[in-house]
Image (cartoon, rainbow, N blue to C red; front, side, top):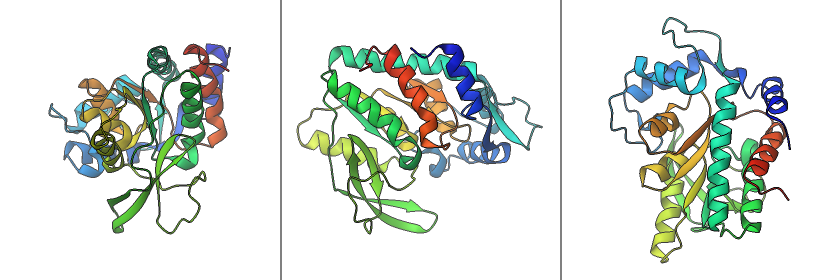
Length: 271
């Protein structure tokens, strides 16, 4: 089993934690927009509490280890690897618990180019453990508002992981897809599952709107998030999201493999 020390070293070497590529300017902009309840940054969360920018800086300092000083406005953000490790343990424990129950699960990503392999390995292991990996609404169209206007995407599944892709992408099932923060895909998937009479997922695993959208609808949801994605951490603070792992969510896809091994080992799902 990969030791905690070895994983900590990898997190820092791969810049998954420590100084990360996400800039302080990007994060502060996201906090301002979240405080203004901009739906592009809420990504499916409907906050119960009032969150000002200073509140969000304090929350992200606590959850991620970024600077809690509002006067710190430039440079790279920093994620405390210890917070990543603690959250990763909690994440793995939830994966292990759903595997023990052999309960249905749903996995989805808005970062298919980076995180598909991480989620696909979990889907494979959960399926081998007897969980049903759900794939509702396969091929369904989803209209998502982007900075380029309203665009239509198609829902697809790759190795049990949901993603959206451009209609012009004629390679269904391949490991490419669109980057999205929208909660509309997971809402579409969950509605389709309900309309079909179930089963519904007992755990949703993913990022961005997949976690926030599912959590807001009352499903247990866990996922990964960067320092410029405050919605997931607000969801966790308000009890809507179960676990959020702070890390850079856009490094090379192979850099997530040690995290996969660590999670599967802790969840007793290693093959």
